[in-house]
Amino acid sequence: MSGRPTWHPPRAGPVLALVIALGLSMPGAGFAATVALIKSGPLAPYEQAAAGFSSAYLDPVSAFMLDEADPAGLLRRIEATRPAVVVAVGLKAALFARDRLPRVPLVFCVVPNYQRFDLTGGSITGVSADVPPERDLAALRSALPGVKRVGLLFGRASGAALARRARAAADAAGITLVEAPVADLSDLQRVASDLAGRVDALWLPADPTVATPEVFRALLDLSLAQRKPLLVFSESLVRSGALVATSPDYAWMGAQAAGIARRIRSGERAGDIAVLPLRRTRVVFNPATARALGCVVPSAADSGIEMLP
Image (cartoon, rainbow, N blue to C red; front, side):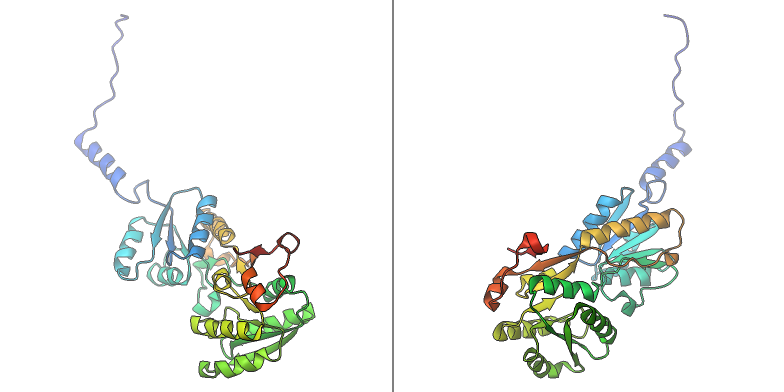
């Protein structure tokens, strides 16, 4: 033995012990999540976007599911994490965050027609879920190269801007667009039946007036009865019987939301970050529907189309 005294760390006094205990147990005291991720529900697109976010954002995250039965309780749980940024997946989550957490920067994704819901302002940005009409028409052409006349069904008021963009895209693609604005859904059957008789394919866009389960079912029945292919806006509708859709790449959207969250955490103001346009999409096709319509099933390898089982 050298005779050198052995050093022992000082014992924590009662005040220091209390500080340490509080620091370990209290949210926001050095261990708080920097981002609150709120999903509108358990739908597959929301799950895919959330997974894309998680794979790209490696800092602490607290995940929440929108609880419409107890919004006050959900708000308390989110506030307890003291988030520096809220990432909202889906419209309901985005509106919840905008209205109940107005001082926290908001990044939204998987929200179609976000401008319609006033998701703008100095503390809001996000990733657009709106598929450009030219991509919809390109998908239809990939699936049906011979299509020349396409009938677009849309709400007279809610879909006017969409119809203008679709008209320009059709002109550029050499496709004749036959427009069928709907003012009252009670007149839908007549308008749709008349439209189907004048076109090679029907187009149901993500317009809030006509993008309803009832309208989709009516158009799907018409599509199968008159053998007119139906172009829609989501994979789930293709799985339900429509022929083809251009769908957002939801995982890509989540990854882009992660990049925006990092920029905000680095000091950028959310309102100074432009909403990112949708740059990655997927084309999904229902071969069973194609055979029912008498259409040729395209080669997935040549067209880049995803064939559903």
